[in-house]
Length: 158
Image 1 (cartoon, rainbow, N blue to C red):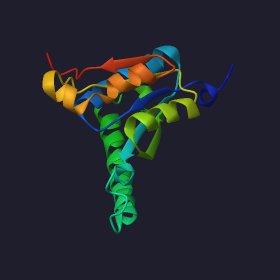
Image 2 (image 1 turned 90 degrees about the vertical axis):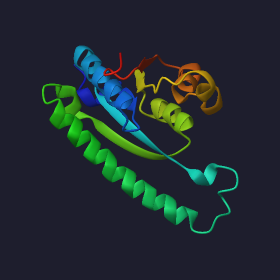
Image 3 (image 1 turned 45 degrees about the horizontal axis):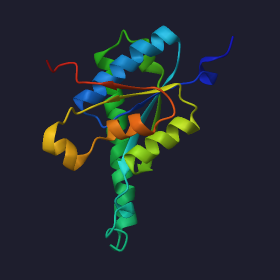
């Protein structure tokens, strides 16, 4: 029997929002049923890859500070989730990754790199003009992913 580490993980991109929490809970339930590990991913948006920002002085140093802050937030986030849901064992053995870049691109790259079985991610549920103007990371991941993607709405919304 293969060890848990060699099994294909469920990839859960998080932005620390309520919809990310709902996605993480859904992924934990799936992980327990499938006996699969969970990889939690947070992407720090790399502003230096946005036109106009690459010439700003000190931007790389600022990005490094953003990474440090995001790393602290990710660690606190996972600790609070684990404390809030002590009975979901899959939440207590997650691998957490922090990476810099454009979110959709990085989510897809990490899914390939870790050989994820699926991606479970939250959706803010924007509609209308805000959806058209801002786009949807979840929608882009669904369109571009080579593996199944489950979109989870915030469980607290009705």
